[in-house]
Image 1 (cartoon, rainbow, N blue to C red):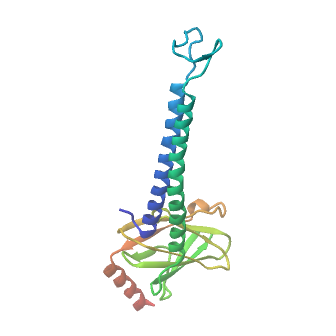
Image 2: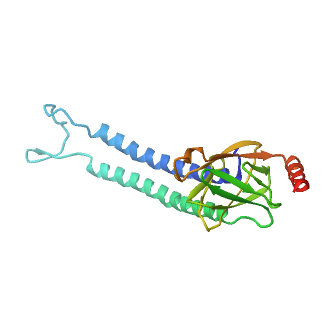
Length: 220
């Protein structure tokens, strides 16, 4: 099971690409193997078949019409696969992009601020932390920016990445589907400490998350 809705979307899309590539590759390599075996180099000293047609004294090649028919049939198969598969890949890609770029309304919104070499997460009540905590099964919208240079915020397990750019707010969203801790890191080289620019997203039960969040409201 995917750990988030975004991981589920991109896993399905990857599967579509994979199966299309496997089918086309199997046909192409199958044809190549067939011709390598069938039309491999013959021993020049071997006698011609007695029934080989000739014009004068020159033996004529046999099987050309059959070879042409085979090639046309295999080409047709590849064309049909591409005609059916490519539109599916294109449509699936645009649907994935549209889904990721169109977050639902009225959900939990958290600001993500990148600075060399750390991430900060600001919750709706103003509380700021270096760890991202979110409830499972709820849509979370991240508004991402930077205070210094270009960064790239990414959670690999969730299959999400987005640029953190000074003076600009980029938005991405996800819905976590499994409890646990997942790695956050920067994917844009931003200086000598780039490799240390990591954090953690903790996916919690909704009741636990809301208790934690309520305790923050009391403290602020």
